[in-house]
Image (cartoon, rainbow, N blue to C red; front, side):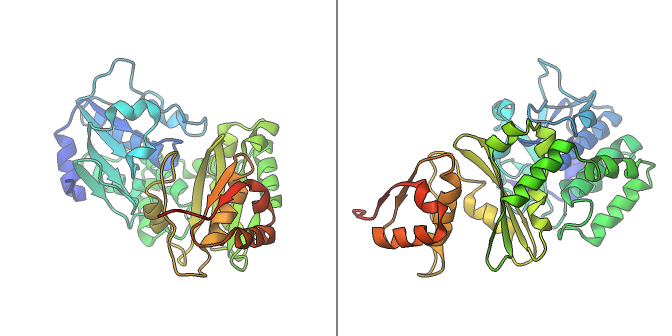
Length: 356
């Protein structure tokens, strides 16, 4: 049973901690890294020992914000705190030994699974950086060294303040951080207005291969491993490409499917008010994993088979698919697969006689 803490209660609890280890999520973005760096510096300003657990997935874009803050080998924490992590499934591999030792989780995701005994959650916040700002200013002065990573956290999770999650509170916090004397223009140039030639080539290929659904309101883009290898793309070239699909005119649901390794695909959503991305996360329980089962339900004719066959079409590019149906005949499945084109080639075999 987790205790839901207010911002004030979270600040009070943090004052009792020392030798703190801060965890970030797998494939770390600006929000989780920025929050970790800001919290670590705030705790140090309070005279406490604090480090960030090194994250093997961090890219050159965000690594500098952790300079001097990474935990050394052999550090034994007295307390473990997670930032911007909604589920234990998002812990990097080197954090597995701490999954049962997290005493406080600070987050903004509506899909938070409350895995820690104490959780500070503001699901209305556009970024975890907003929550951390409210906490840190109760603990110590928000110096430029703290304000800069917090600005990175807030700006990156809002797409430089253009995503639908951006609120007036987001802008107020950003303004207060800028008033601390940080170089916001420099950050914005690096994070939002600078792209490598490889990145531009990847975007062009993704747009050329994109698929449109639901009267062109849903855009699906993919990042196969073969494309990354062909263009010799680094992780920095690939990060945050999930925002590209949502830029297509007329779209209110952008889906990006990134192949992480053979048999493993990461799905990212960028949505408008019509589609609740948090609800999708809750339904999938953090995502589909090997050996798991996800039940897709709904009234007859709502589109379950079409949706699943479209998923088969994508996964079938790198995997063999066994399609099991207790509702439709093989002929019906074939007709729908023929209509969808690539789906038919993706299915290795279809079984329709399922015994009860």
